[in-house]
Length: 214
Image (cartoon, rainbow, N blue to C red):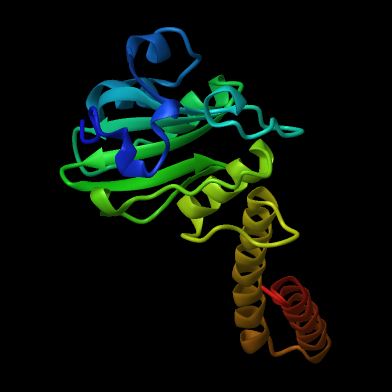
């Protein structure tokens, strides 16, 4: 456990500090989990600690339309692997937004559940600072999650969930484009080759429109 007694290392006010250990059994004995995820709680996770509760009562930021509280959980790892399925199960079981700080040695990485669990880059734990937007809890969550996923404070006019969904869509389209281009290069029949060429152009245009201004 890296941050014990030093939650201020995350740059969050002392009024948000909780420092409450959550028994792993509370998750793997009561949640509907497959056997691999259940084992991951035992084999991959040393401990789970609620480090901070960011909400109107602890920070003075007004509640948002969809976010009333963000919990910061430190997940101390036993080894190198981030237990993504276990973290996703924890996040889906909680009504609040969760930001995970996975720790190993002197390193840490941030992780959040958007459509899927997204794990940020490993970095020196002492250098992690979480910023807060005082507008409301919706914006506070957006900034915190953006820091975890993208290493920035978000994008104007687009929530972190929307941004991530668009990035996922672009990635899937590029995979599809690569397959269609490969088929086009190999195709000998003229009519089918033309149809594949049109499909390539359509995919390229959709990707261009999605990437425009990003």
